[in-house]
Image (cartoon, rainbow, N blue to C red; front, side, top):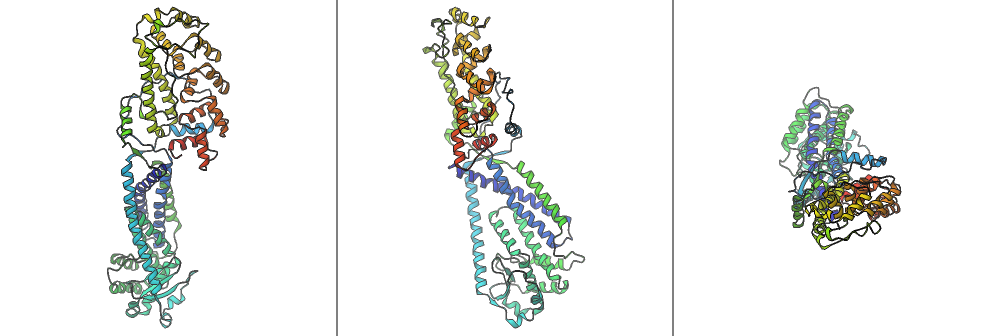
Length: 623
């Protein structure tokens, strides 16, 4: 799947999933708020519901943006956590470099508890999106058909006769506001409706003009005018759109149903500003009796009410001491808005992200490879992991290898033989396995895990050398010159295992002297084996220490393991990052950030990104 399309699918799935629980939770908050003010005026109750509905639309999108911008890799569904092997000795972890604020922020992010990650097969995610598109398209088509029907009604409607309008005293005395409102009649509707948006119009059923008294029609018209004065037609449009996009969401459905009811009661309160409750209640009862039920619902305020909703309206009209003010009370509304804001902040931290599970045969092979290696899935190396230098100097052939004197020792040309083939093959196989696994899961690897695994890969070479300890002990006895060279370099009383390991990877007296001249005084045997196994040469040590100060052997091994070179630092400087510390370069190189990646980011409009932003952008797989 195209990466951009892949991201869109995950984004839609996140919106739909987050919308389910967030809208439901917001509906619960709104229900509690309404229960806390049973005698509150309908305008305030309507405002509370509007705030909850808008939050139900915005919050899932906002949290989906947060979660999809985080790394969401393709996770092997069948890979379990394995026991982590012991790390190589690396007690000094670039602690001599003072961390920058960006680096400290990066470490804080890495140390934070991870967001819940829901594994989801890609075909399932695509199926969810397709089903949602089909359902939303069906509801949207119905909505468009309803709107077209309203437009036709408006086009075919006839104005109410002038002599009849003259009898509507409340209509004539009412303030229409800044909108031009027309009063028309139609024989194609069962109940009065206010049709607004860009052309405000009140439509009255033709038979109402014949069956109801002008005073009752006057009250009904005043009710519909209140819809337009309150801009209920626009809020109603948002409701219908929300119901179409989240047709499956019970929280949205409840909020919309309550909004329809509270909106009608709020408009009834507008009528009560000029009327007594009892005559108006009798008027609504006549409307219920004369209406043809069920009628065709339309996308207009008041057009979705049922007989039960009409009975609730009449009951509230007759309720004594009810607050009928038509202004929103700031206290209850403010409390609800604060609760919604707190819920939104909390949702940003707890909303899960979605990751695709392994489904292809190639990825399944990767899963099998992970199962047979001690490398945990959370310590996979990035794709940019450089190949360790091929181990040299055979173990079995040491006895026949020519003696190397101090004058002829060359750290770059250790002896070779055919018997090293097994060692080389084992190391190459393990390296390719790590590279294959990292290609499938690099985006799931944190910076610290990538660096640790780079050291783990170098330790594999040491482990390979240790596997050769089983060779005949006569190896060292038949190579007195090699023992004498090491003794002259200050390494005496070495065990057979240590001699075999050093000889297997090509550690010579000349190599040791080269490291010491470069600024590494008397490295340990373990450090020598590791440095030689991953290809660290004296020139590399010298150049790194010139750029970044007195780094130790373990620090240099970490930098070399992830591929940090002076050339890499120069490339990053040419890309606009000239003042990076060694630790920052290590983090960037570990996840595969290079000058080419920065150029691609700049081409997409991402300029002057911090180290943390570069790492997040790279591990997210967006570019």
